[in-house]
Every structure is written in structure tokens, then in C-alpha cells.
Image (tube, rainbow, N blue to C red; front, side):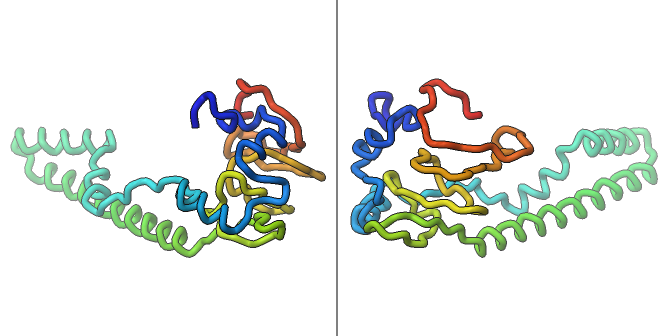
Length: 192
């Protein structure tokens, strides 16, 4: 989106103007239009970080300042001929690195397995009717219906609201839900 694009500051646009710019309506998109936009814009996904390799996880175990100090102490012990002290220190470092590696490797695999099993759904108006779709299929111009407990699948503009409270603790640290309502927000407004 460019700065001349009215959707680049969508939060500062009247809903009618934004819907017109997105070639949408309060009844949502047609199934065909949504499919075209999904093909054009791609899925509504945050790009995942590259998967960390096992070798990288193992090498990361030796980045800790404490581990580096212990390795330095082991090297000094070797230089001064204190072989037993050096072996003990190196054994502690290797044991700690192996334990840390195993824990991180298992945790990263568990996260990947969970991520592959969890599918987020959203209710979007398609052809004027609410349809349950995958959150990754939400496209620009979709009208999404939210209810209590819904996860918000994408950035958007509130068209209608009735007791609409959002937990935005991840974004702002605010511990209590904040009420949201339809209306325009200044173009230079902060995230909060």
C-alpha cells in the first residue's frame, strides 16, 4: 500500500469510503472475489521464523557468559597443568550444554507440533451470508463477525459494535479489556 492509497490509513477512513476503496460492502465479498484476492494477496499469515537446526541449538548453548567464563577457566587450568580441574569444568559445561540442548530441542518440536494442529477460524460474510473460514483465508475487504471469545483474525475497522471489549495486553500491557467502538481515529494515532 502506498501513502496515496486510502487503505494505507484505513483507521482514519469513513467505513463507506474504505469499503468503496476495497470494492466491498457491509454484506462482505462474494466467494469468487474473495478467492481472487486470496490468490492476489496470499494467505493472511505472519511469516514464520526459520526453523532452528539442531546444530544451531547446540551451538547456542555455548553463548552464555557463564559458559564462556567456565571455558576460559578450563583453558587456564589446561595451561597451568591442572588437568583434573579442567576435565571437571569441561564435564560440567558439556553436561549443561547437552541438558539445555535436549530441553530446547524438545520444546521447539512441541511448539511446531502444536502449531500444525491449531487452526484458527473466523466468521466472514461471503455472498451476504456468514461463513466459517480459516483465519488465513481472510482477505482485504472481508467483513468479519466477532463474538465473545473470538480471536481477531486481521487488522480491521469496527463497523458495528455492542459491548465490544478487546484484550490487548499483548500489544499494550493493559491488563483489563478495552472497549472498542465504531469511529474514526487520527491518521497519526499510536497503536494504543
